[in-house]
Length: 223
Image (tube, rainbow, N blue to C red; front, side, top):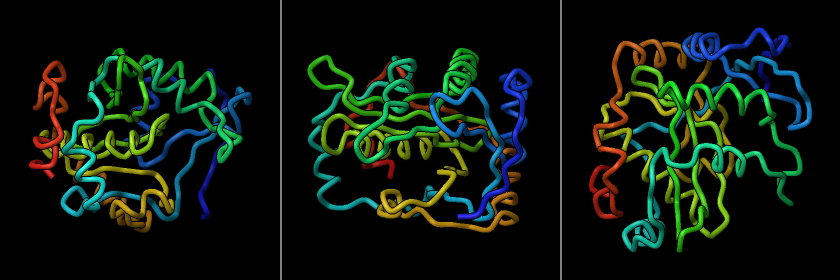
């Protein structure tokens, strides 16, 4: 997939600049976890999951309804982003370098970055993190250590975004994994129009209090 990228010097990127970049439709990546540099990316085709068109298989719905995992929100950012940055047999390289972890950690402290976590028997077994800005949520990365854990986290994310009145769920790129949930690709100009509209609204991440667990049936009811 073609994308425009512009190298930048990492010291120039601050949390404030990061927010401005996302509002302009661009996001940072690194060549690898060991590369200290970052570059801006603006894909020609952008992946989004329409919040009113989320696809959920019958099997996954059963798993969500069973409450196999305990869902927590915003309790373990460092552990979530560290897990997302781990190399795996099917993903030897990761784009999450220390600078990204540092900046997103600062944005988490400021309340712009959030996590949805799956726990079982006291262990973090899956989850995701992303950035919230206006009525847009930019999904960054997800991971799983048990079957379906990242998928269940995504279902709970969509339920929370719908509850909070968000307008846009950005996935950056389309992938085979995300396609099963209804992800679509839209051209850059169309994406910018959706983004501009979403930024005119205020999504309420805490419309469902983070301290109050949302069970599977409640999540499915909101989807």
